[in-house]
Length: 53
Image (cartoon, rainbow, N blue to C red; front, side, top):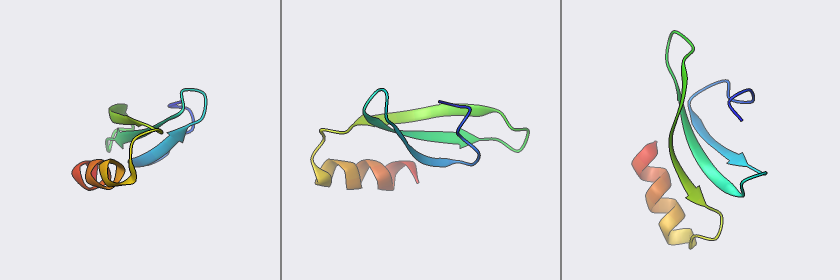
């Protein structure tokens, strides 16, 4: 998945059916910080999105 990551942000991992938040440092190091299952309620998604952004 990290091959698709170009900048920090939320990405959809289609193979694992989840949302992932990736951080890309100034040196280009890519780190998955957090993920959330697609089945989570929209209120949980919004709370998660606000906590990682």
